[in-house]
Length: 518
Image (cartoon, rainbow, N blue to C red; front, side):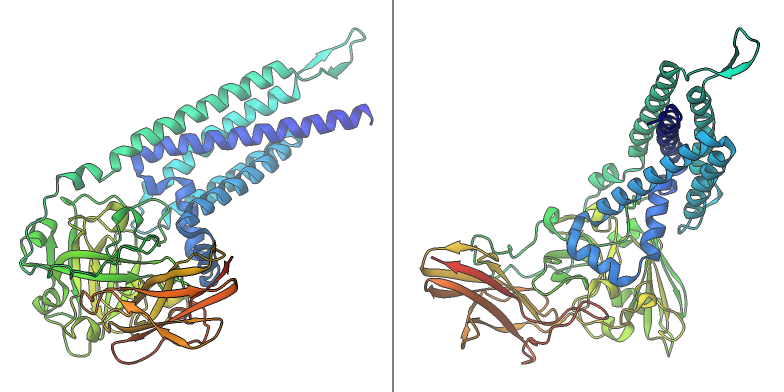
């Protein structure tokens, strides 16, 4: 290896390191500025949100299916990895030609600015974190590249030559810049906590329901180890949304606007919402991204104001067939007017399992409509209801190929035994849950190795809007076996064996597990 090659390689490595440190400075300073302008203006969050919006629906479904509730962490990690690669390239260019590196850094900032200012409800100040972060990073990159290059000096013969770079100076400068990035980022994270609505949530006292849910029937929870509990704890309830940062909405600042094709617009504060006659109702929610046998279903006791009553208060005009609800984060969801008004307990919910809504589940208020997948019914952090038509407006997910109307399909799931489980021959409890919200479950059956269907024992029903646990006693013989389950809903329709993906209106098929009996 020649001396020139070594020198060139070393320059490239120092340049790449300079680029990485400069990018860290940009992100750290941007985080600190975002503590003033708001968390959604953070470049990583803004770019991530834009990436989610631009991602095709099948890719999103893949991410939800394979990463689950960690899909957002996976996206943020991917963004940071790409930023690191981009930063290393910028630094390498800067080592050869500083102007090119600074131009690359400007592109880096432009992406952040564009993403931040185009987010829902973003103002001009949203551009500041990326602009200031890149400006400081440009200074850091210039200092680091100059340190990496070294300085010119005269030799005894009077000729100018380039001295060997001062590695100590470069490493000291890089270390100081990296420390500044860490301090700025840490301070920003600390200051961003003041945006949290957790303290406000802790002060909310929910009133007693005017219409209380009946006591949960004895036997609704079979208490079989491994089977989903009848009521899903808030901490275990699935979360699928497009937000990298959970919206923080203060009850004092929250308002609900009912607009569009109405006789008169309605505006409600949170305090006024709590003064309405509140209804308690047990209801199972299901995400359209839930694959057959998947985990994105949960059951809770909800407390809220009647959505039909609020719409009647506004006076819907003839011809309206859609309620386009909007969240504080800009998400829009379309719900058929006919479904909301057909007598089911559609709510603007403020409580979940006896407590104010958790922040990640829509505090201070959200929509819940029995029998519909969440993407057409369950708007979290809801702030606006626009009465309109499907012909006039399309919601976020319908713009991306999902059906405008999506009743939850009749589904069942085997919770125990788990897939690929091994256990000795003898009596085995095969058990799980089944759901068909607003139709109810009338029967569940299990078959072994494609043989005859066996009727399972159902837990007591808590109305038609909740799931039901089920169990079947299996005398397991040694060997490799496939267990399959199917449910029949209250209308007499049996779960189809036809396999289909989640797009455009929910997955179909029958859940099955393979087990080994020894």
